[in-house]
Image (cartoon, rainbow, N blue to C red; front, side, top):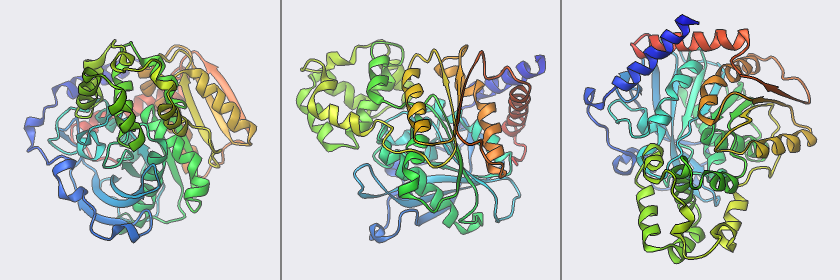
Amino acid sequence: MKRLLAVLCAVLLVSTMATPAMAATPSPPQSDPFYSPPEGYESLAPGAVLRSRQVEISAFAALPQKVQSWQLLYRTNDALDRPQATVTTVLLPWGAKPGPRPLLSYQVAEDSAAPQCAISYQLRQGAGNENIVAQAEILLIDAAVQQGWAVSVPDYEGRKSAYVAGKQAGHATLDGIRAAQNFTPLGLNSQGPVGLWGYSGGALASGWAAEMQPSYAPELNIGGVAEGGLPVNPAHVLEQANGGPFAGIAMSGIAGLSQAYPQLAEFLDANMTAEGKAALAKAKTQCNSGNTTTFAFKDLFKYFTVKDPLNQPVPRQVLAEVTMGKATPAAPLFVYHSVNDELVPSADTDRIVRQYCADGASVKYQRDILSEHVILVATGAADALNWLKDRLSGKPAPAGCSTKTVLSSLLSPSALLTFGSVLYHDLLALFGRPIG
């Protein structure tokens, strides 16, 4: 245990020492021509690769990761089913040759409404640490590459940074998988096993992709989906976050939804105070850490000129559209959630698990007592990874559903062993050891 704590402290120390001065700053998405789709791309099939380039991936924008990596610009659809293009970062273990292998689509918690917050940019050497929360998930991305898997990390919010737009996120996640399978240098089998994994905002994208996959991408062989801290109902998240330390995440959500739904943008313009409009504009320029600091403990409803803005017709309609539960996933699910989650109500997750189970889904649901929202992203990762390893190795998930409430997700020998192994190998990766 002492060795494990020493490794964790070393990882945290290295992350705080990382600075962007070690490399030139790449152009952000809004000024990088790579992100602009070519003329006529709309006629191509979703998942078509429009452009690709090799890139160097770094941890915390400063520590190069020895892994093969590319960016793919691909065709997808937005929340209103209109063609758009976005980027996924795809990775192979160092030295691995193209060929069939499992593919994991890992969705980070971008939780932002500004284009420079996209993970494709934040993973670039020299990009800076503006979205350091999402950047920290390189530790889990590396853990997936360590399994010998190919990994796709999509910018599921799209070019408009449409945070919380569930249908947009589902499209982009599934089409990112298609793009990875279409990309010749990976050499993947289109029928090969695929997994999805995400926590919090990343779980929102993974959960929507799981619900949409049977109708939108039925050809994909989804072996399993791990989703933690699942934001089922964004209205409830907004209400719970408002006025507290996570109010900035709610502000990012309002900004992101306004960029996905024109009718909401019009409503906000007509029904926000001058101070509120300035706050909204600022939220569209900052990543989640900046918005968390700017709007901590603020009552966002005071930015409106109408009472109870969430129950006005337009916001009510949009929030209904981005609430999960519109379909039942065909793929097996591992859902993990903190009983005492202070940001994402556990009652919503309890409810949707019951709904999925009543509809015949395969769900393993783990409720964690000692964690809270932020802690569970780390303490729940080992069980999620172990479950995905079983699914992607061909071991079938048990039929039906099970729900288990545990004191801590780390209090099992298998979780502790995996957690320690991941931290140890991540530390080596941070110092340049090949990943895979």
